[in-house]
Length: 613
Image 1 (cartoon, rainbow, N blue to C red):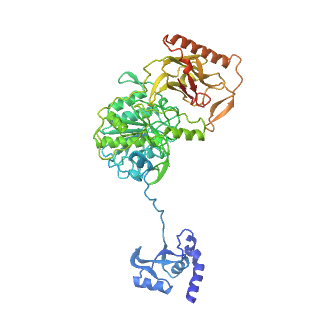
Image 2 (cartoon, rainbow, N blue to C red; image 1 turned 90 degrees about the horizontal axis):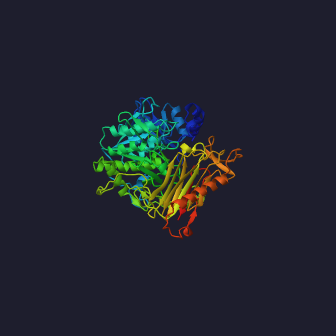
C-alpha cells in the first residue's frame, strides 16, 4: 500500500512534466479508467523490462519482443498515473493512438437502384460490366486524380480555359470529381474500370465556357480512344443557346451547338448531358436540349422526380440524382452526398461506358438506343412528386405532364446486367420535338407584347400533350419580340391537352417600368395571361438571388394602358379565328371548351399554362 500511495503521489508530481495527464482527454479510456501504452527501456532485455514493471506493481499483459526504435517494448494496460510512474523510473512510454474507424462500406443508393427494375432496394449492385476499354471524357472543372476512387489509373486531360496554368486537376468545389466518380469511380461508379480524360471547361467561380465546351466535344471526337463517352454536367446562366452560330473557317460555314453534338454522335462519341436543375422546360437549354444528346433528369430514392429537375419533351431519361454518395475532391478518400441532374447524368454515362465495352461498339446511336431499351417505363412517379411539391409551395412546380422524345411515360435508367441482352437493331437518328402534323377546328393563339429585352431573351413554346405523354410542337418563337409591339402566333388544332411555356433567359421577368405581357387565347377567348398586369411584379434581387415583390411604378405619360392592349390582342386573336376557322368546323366546337391555368409566376420567367379543348 505504501508503494502504491507513493506511486500515485509521484504521478501527480510528474504529470505536468510527462505530459501524459495532459493527454488524458485525448485518450480512449476503458470503463476501468485504463488504457494501453507501449513501454520500453533502452538496452534492457525482455526479462529486465518485465522486472522493472514488476517493481512498479505493473504487469505486461502481452509479453513480446516488440521494437520501439532500437529498444524492446511491451504493451501495458494501466491508468494515467501508472504511465507517469513508468516515465519517472526511466521507462519510455508511448500513449495508444486511435484513428477514425472507416465507415462500413456503403453502397450508393443510385448504384443499388439502377441494377433492379423496382423498389425496394436490395443493398447490392450486381453488374459485372465495368467498362474496361471504354473512355470517359469529363467536361467540367477538372477531376481530382489523387482521390482513392481513381487509384491505379492515370487520368489525362487538358485545361481548356487556362485557369490552372494548364492543370486539369480539380481544385474547385469538386463538381467534376463527383461527376467522374459517379460514372467511373471505384466504390461510387457505374463503370469503375473505364479510362478517364479530364477536360477543364469550367472555372472555380465564373461558370463554364461555351466555346471551351465545344472544344471539349471536338477534342473527344478526335481523341485516339475508340469507345468514347463524354459527360456534360454543366448548366450555366441561361444555358448555352441553340441559336448562336459560330463560323467554321475550314468548312466556310456556320454551325450551332446542336450541330457540334450531332457531328460528335456521327463520329462515335456518345454525348450525355444534365437536363438542368431549374424546374424549367429542358428544351430551352443547351447542351442538354440538343437532339443528339442523351439528356438526363433526376429522381430520388423513392422514384419520384427531384423537386428541382428540368422536365419536358427534351428529357430522354431519368436517373438517380438526389443525395447521391460520391467522391469529395481535395481529400484522399472523402465522400459526400450531392444532388442534381449533374449527378444523374454520370449514371447514364456509366451505363454508356458499360455498353460500349461489353459489346465492343463505338456506335453512339446504338448505345443510345440500348440505354433507352434497357430503361424501365412506369417507375417514375411524377404525379406524386407534383402533389408533394404543391403542398410545400403551391404553384411553384411547373411540371404538369412529362414526355420523352421516344414516347411513353418517363424512363428510369437501368444498368447493364448479365446475361447480356441483344443490342437493338433499330437505332434511329434522334430529332427535336416533333411538330404537330394535323390540324383541327380549334384556334390557339399566343400574343406577346415584349419589353426592351424580350427581343433577345424571351422564348415561348406551345405544345400538344398526347395521351401517351409525348409532346408535339404547335407554336414556337425564340426572341424577336419588338418592344411595345404585339406579336401574334396562331395554329389550328384538334381537341386535346396543350401546354404553354415561356422562358426568360435571365429569369428577371418583364421590366417593371414597361407594360409587357403574354396571353393565350382559345377560339378567341382569353384563357391565360401573365406579365405586368397586377399591383406587383416579380424581379430578381441580385444581392440576395431571390425573387422579391416590387411596386409597379406609375405608367409613363405616353404608355398604352394595359387593358386596351389586351383588348387589342383579343381582337387580333378573334380575327385569326375567323380567318383560319374551316367552314366545316362543328357548330358546337366552342361549347365543349374548358380551360385551366396553373398558378403563374409573375413576369415571364417560368410562365406555363395547361389548356384543355
